[in-house]
Image (cartoon, rainbow, N blue to C red; front, side, top):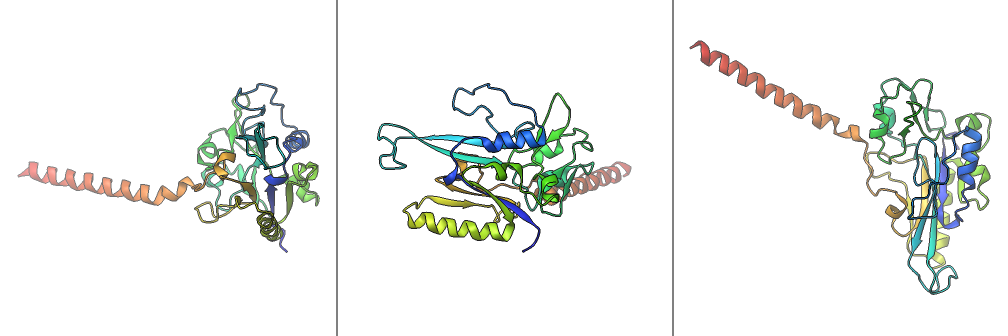
Length: 260
């Protein structure tokens, strides 16, 4: 096994306790989010951002008799702990002009806040909307993959804290094998709507944070086809070069026509 690591978040085991959010804040000394409820959910953090590096989504489903032992008249809940995906081809890392974002030996994308100049190029280049600028601080922040803990041979704080082992962490090859076995088990128990989310088929090229979810991954803010914006650079520069060539040819033609 290599030292390249990954998260595997199994939402079928998540109970929505938010212990991962709290553990992340405590270890990384991230500021609290407060209790500003959205009005649409019991979730007080809402989404990943500069002060929320782990976020537990609360997804309410219509009553479905026989599912999860719920009363037929009660809604059921789905929970999923979201995090930075640490993409193989990371748009944030490609866009950063200062070198504040780097790739670590564990495969994660690490943001050095003391090098960040607050330009926000990483914010608009993240296909998952993970990176956010703190307007009070002027710098961007996101999950560090608990690089300091990994250097000491420890698990990230969120994985260590999860009481149901919904968040697993380890060598990336091991996580992929665990995911395959888990999906087989869930399918054998009649859960035919289980999906393994890791967008290896897109320009992102796979992630170091994969997920097992029931139903449509989009309901947990996991886009079906995330794209690294820089993949369009070649076409953009080609179009610009062709346009410039046409303008130059037109100018020369006009100049020669005037001389006659």
